[in-house]
Length: 266
Image (cartoon, rainbow, N blue to C red):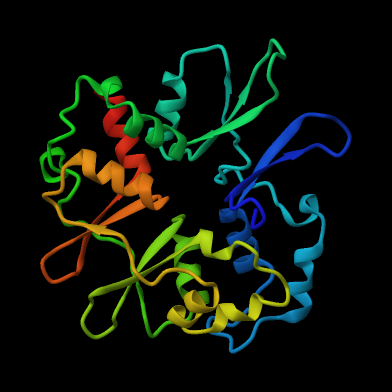
């Protein structure tokens, strides 16, 4: 994943040429939180013996959990309409394994990001939606209870919250002013190994710095046009937009799921 700058990876069966699952960074996060980390709520270091289990075979460390997207892998026929895929994406599925049952092309993965990129490059496919309309006009900016992390927490503690809420990213705010200063996401786990896993107990901003992640979160305001929001997402290779108010505090988040749900209802 680190080598190819991706967040998910199809896994073939060890005894056939069938793809049996798609492991993603959420799975990595859940494994680290549940298996490779010491039991204390706020450990000063991680359990190095358990951390070595990151070198175990995938089938050893992956448990069957029906709530995991990798367990209930969504599949689609390459020769069928894309609408069922859009419906799945609008309900929170992030990726789909596409199979050509005529065997003309090998299996491939299509993601929510692929859909957003296509729409941004081909706006004419959304003739029923006014892309000049603001996020507020589409009801995508109203204040809601966004799960947050604070700069005085460890990365591990914020990741625990992320795992508990089944999220892939959380805004990081200053604990005293509540202003947005960063984003912690599962993408920041790319390249994690048993040598660097102890970085998880660092303060979240220091963890992001060590991970060479940006501390400049991408934000928009409620009056930004939908077409500009799409361009911002595509140009910055991100999966969510934080909607902030005039005080730079997070009011809402617009996810790829939110956008695809809007488009699929057009």
